[in-house]
Image (cartoon, rainbow, N blue to C red):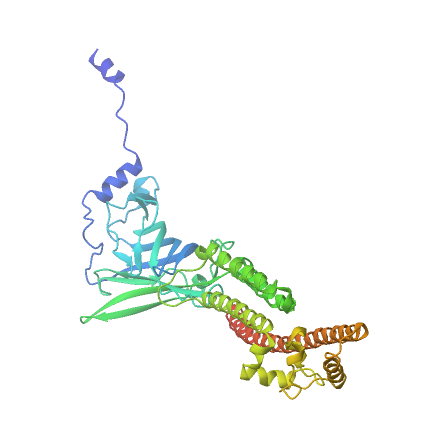
Length: 446
């Protein structure tokens, strides 16, 4: 009966090979001790890096946010087993908190970002430990924004051991430097930034009679400028062209100044709305910021020039004659053969007070009419009154003709001044635009 009960008891299940292997490896394992049998042998940590994307470039804080695939490989001499003893298991995953992990850090590290936690590492039967994990890191980087939006950035990722010297932990590249530099297969190449290359090199830093191993990856990226050219530069250039075309509006139409004020107001609103598109930097103003300021200054200069010319256009002849510069210009550039007659400044009601010997001379025909008019004033009659009225009408028409000739001469002078200032404005604008185009073209194709 007893043997019958013993046969009915279920057999105790055996532990799995993975469970036995894990217990065997970690039974006497000390995660605080560097895993070498001979303490004089350094532990070589192989490092590999694949850049996945550039998430943000902040010129104000001088930092860059990147997403990378980071790989560490080293040999743990305490995690070695024979696969035949454990059902052929040659690789196992272990908790990263249960084994020794090298203290390799990023020197430019600022913030960890939103990296997903990976709590396990892979270990094979020869003791090779593979620590693969995605990382989103915020790195300190010296950003040069002067050439925005045609800028290139050069940021470094320097891996080093925080405490151990090269005699304890040494670093090495898992792949060749050429393979890492040209590896773009995982990079998201449809964003704002274009990956150029990732050169890398190994070097040692000497401090306090001790050498520390470093591996530096240099991320070379270039901004794609199309978005900013279409959204910032082209609208600004269009507004400047409209301002240049506005010089062809007539001087005496009265609409040029209103039109230029509207352009200046529109440009101001355009700049305010696009403030967030400009990179914020406290060190050096980007050239595109200088471009916008100079464009606004040129618009203001154009408006001031138009106001000056219109003001001169509406001066009376007496005021012009009192201005020495204007008098010289009028004498030099006025219409040849026309003299501003005194009758243009004298009313018909004061004909008796006209001084023929004054500063200005009258035409001979008008002078004879005035003499005859003065002679007939003593003996008025119907015929004489009619003659007097005809002479007065002729003088009035002559006054209108002389005023028209004076206005035409002054308008011609103001037009010549406006043309000269317009050409000077075009020269300054062309020199400035040419300099900027040469700089941006050299940066874009460099």
